[in-house]
Structure formats: structure tokens, C-alpha cells
Length: 304
Image (spheres, rainbow, N blue to C red):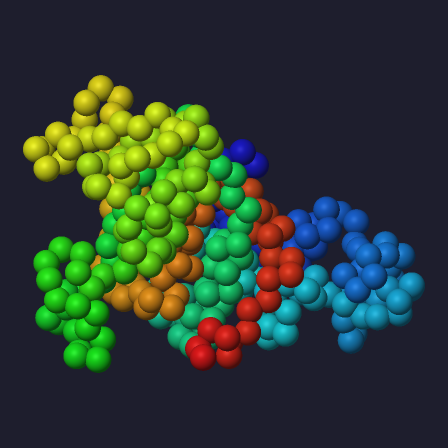
């Protein structure tokens, strides 16, 4: 199927039940040849009635399923609901709340939140290739006004970014984004992000924030927003700012609040969805499943 979009009707045609979802997970994880996650042997026996588990390794004699060694391990949710949740998170460009996921899947909000956070954990640990060519760099500030917060939550008074969390990102003109939460917007931090995520020799576009001064190993162009200059030939940061617009609309319209503890997961969710938005939905689902290996996340680690 070569369509970019997969309608809800088509999704349920392809995956009508738990069995079809299980086979899809197994195909994407093992590429058609089942391998024991305990000892990597391919000498596998399929258990009758899949009890106590679907497969048993003839070499190490251990039982296992496609869930073992992934974020799905020990989850009581059907694989069909896992797959449907991934589809929902892909289909909603500005995100989908755990309340809505819970209503659609017929589970509690708490379970839906844990489910979504485990999927975000996979996306957060995606191996990133460095951006090259022409790359736009910018930072944005996430959070409400200090005067509207409880005294115990106030981080500092002032206008603009005061007291807010800082997210820095880069977007290549080819449409790929890398973004993450940082502690400050000082020169060492922003230069460190650029050197880590941008290929040397690339052309970097920024605004005139002083922390970008002194970049080496890059061709550096600046756009002066303070004098209402937004485009000068090929020099602009409109691409990364359009990504911030999607992130902020999700923040205000969908989630309403992103805690400092979990903000990085939400930022990586938007980056991964943005980077795969032009691809096939089935490729998106398959890529997510392929990255699940070894990424189990415990609920106690999320809430402690």
C-alpha cells in the first residue's frame, strides 16, 4: 500500500482483531523469521493454543512472545490497542490527550497516559542523523505566565521567557527536525547543541540572539527580527518557527500543560511525527515497532 494516509476504516480493514495485530508486530520485529529473545536461536516451536506463551525455544527451552524485551513487556493491554494508539498519535498532527485515548480505547485515563508515555519513550531514543545543508536554528519557551502560577511553582519574575522551560531545535531545508529541552540559552549550551547535531561545514541560519555569536566550522547567517526583517533571500528561520507553532498549538489546545519532567518526551513526539509526516503510515507504525526492542519503561520510574 503506497498511500501516505491510512483512514480509520482502512486501518480496521487491515487489522480487524488481535490476531492480525500480533502477526504484524511479529513481522516487523523479526522480519518474518522468529528469533528467541533469550538466546537468539531460530530453532523455535509454536505452542499449541499459544499457552502459556505463543513460542518456545528448543535451544534454551524458554517461552516467549513478541512482547518480551520491549516496551510491551508485562503489559496487559491487547496488541491491537497498542497498534491503534500508535495510529492515533500519528493521525493527530497536534497530538491527542490521554483522556481522549482512554475514551477511544475503552481504558482508564491513567492507563492511556502510561501507554502514550511508553510510545514516546521509543521515539525519544531514536538514533538521530546529523542535519546538513542549510539548517535553521532557533529556541522557544514553554510555560505559562509566572503571575498565574502557585508561589511554589514560580521560577522567576519578568517578561518574555522568564520562568519558562527552554526548547532548542534545528530544521534542515529538507524538512528534518532535531529538538530537545535545554537548561538555559547561554552560548555554551546553544553552541553545544549545534556542534552535536549539525554537520560541520553546513550553513546555519539563526536570529540575532547573542549566544549564537562566534560559531566556528559553519557558515553563519543571521536574520534581524528586531527590525521586522523576516526573510532576506535564502536567509530566514521560518521553517523551524513553523515547527514551534505546531508544538505550541499542541501545548495550548491539546495537553494544556507539559511538566518539566516529561517535556522532553512530548518534544520528541512532535519531532518524530514531523519527520515522518510525509511517509507512509504503515512505515511509521513499522518503524516504531522496530525501535521498541530493549526500551521497557516502568510506571514507577515515570511518577517517582
